[in-house]
Image (cartoon, rainbow, N blue to C red):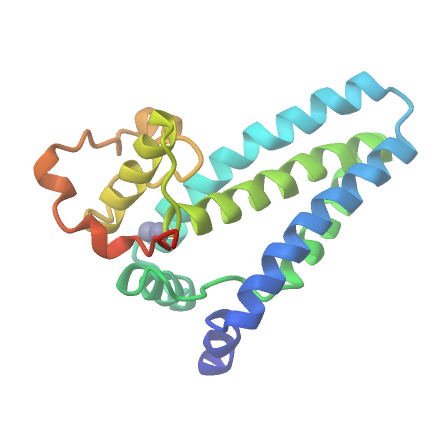
Length: 201
Ligand SMILES: [Zn+2]
Ligand SMILES: [Zn+2]
């Protein structure tokens, strides 16, 4: 069973399909939020809360589910595969973001109006898509922006020091939880292996 799951979660078709379904899930939930909302600015605020809260989930899952030792080895091994091969196609099965988002919205609608639940989950889903696409591009593209280079180095240092710098879209939670590591030029040696930059011809 574990081998079957790993086979799907490491396949190229699942990886690209996931990026598409993650984006689509976020958009569908936003459309639903606009349709069902009784208080559009309240829903916009909850959407922003969703995006921000996702950055915390990104940290929590990466630091505590992927990099701590526990019995759910499939998460640890699946993620270790990305550390060994930064260009592998590791992703959750493509339908999982839609399933998880629907489950969250179902639970939340007991506590808040349906439009707000869709807005909050839409923010989480688009935060997740932003994480996926940023991580994908980080290993494959160079940009002149200082911020981009900083985030790229921040993540590449995590590949070399897996207990530090777990954030991908922000470094804030590493600073909060004491896992921020300020790298030196020495730490950046060998990071070229983590990039597969297509040269323009
Ligand atoms: Zn990476
Ligand atoms: Zn990691």
